[in-house]
Structure formats: C-alpha cells, structure tokens
Amino acid sequence: MTVPVRPSARCRTLLLELSRYFDDDLTPARRRTVERHIKTCGCCGTMAVRLRTIITACRAEGKRRPPRDVTSRAAARIRELLARET
Image (tube, rainbow, N blue to C red; front, side, top):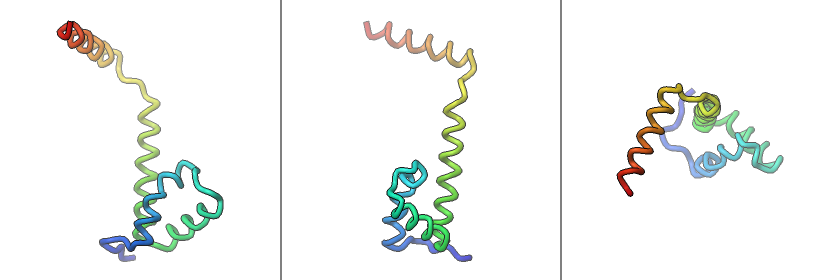
C-alpha cells in the first residue's frame, strides 16, 4: 500500500479529530465516519496507528513515578532556585 506524501483536505480535517476519536469524544455518527476512513485510507490509518502508540506510551509513562534520587535532586534544585530569588 502506498501512503500519499500529503494528505487530502478531507484527510487533514479528519486528522485534526484523531485525538478526540481516541479520547472517545466524538458523536457516534462521527466516530463511525472516522473509523471507516482510517480503515480505507493508508495515510490516515498510518497516522491513527502512530497516534495510538504515542497515546498508549504517554499514558503508561504518566503512571510511573521517578526514582527517589531524581525526586530529591529536583526538590533540592527547586529550593536552591527559590532561595536565589529572595
């Protein structure tokens, strides 16, 4: 399957809605339209797969806590910067 270099005007409109699609923030009718399009359009299908991967990675990363030493160093640095301002 060949993916076009530049998406069409219809694709650009749909691509702007992909985040809302993944957040389940579209009407049922619009959701079906988006789903049909990303199944048949190589460009938008590729973008949907990539965006879903990014969203999944970001959500997983957001659940992890930084190591204690990183948190301690960051807090110390913040205190140091605040002390300089006063």
